[in-house]
Image 1 (tube, rainbow, N blue to C red):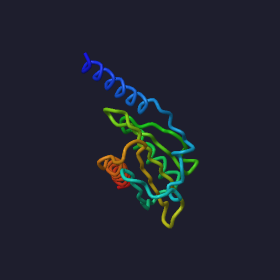
Image 2 (image 1 turned 120 degrees about the vertical axis):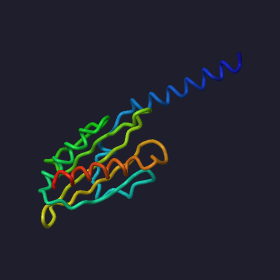
Image 3 (image 1 turned 135 degrees about the vertical axis):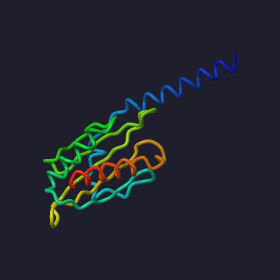
Image 4 (image 1 turned 120 degrees about the horizontal axis):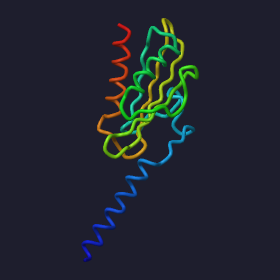
Length: 145
């Protein structure tokens, strides 16, 4: 009987954590930050830059199309016209949110994209953020050829 109660308590705690991870609100004021000015990302985060032969708005529109075509990814804040966009991508099993912010600014020959990806929960992500951003940027580059 004591083991059964322990199992029920453990499962209840696990369910509460799972629900919190999936239902906790995402505050744009916390996550929609300038990736150039933000602190270096913690473990599981990733920041990179890319020069593109597109205007900043065109570069962000192309990036947005690629990001929103990704499963479990949606827009949190911003737009190409704002010069900055933040997306939330949730993991398949637990629904952990990862936040990716991209900003574009004019640069010689086009624009400079700065991408900042970070996780909300946990101490690492086994390279998921880096892999996703790298894949998005490769797809963006392939679309220019």
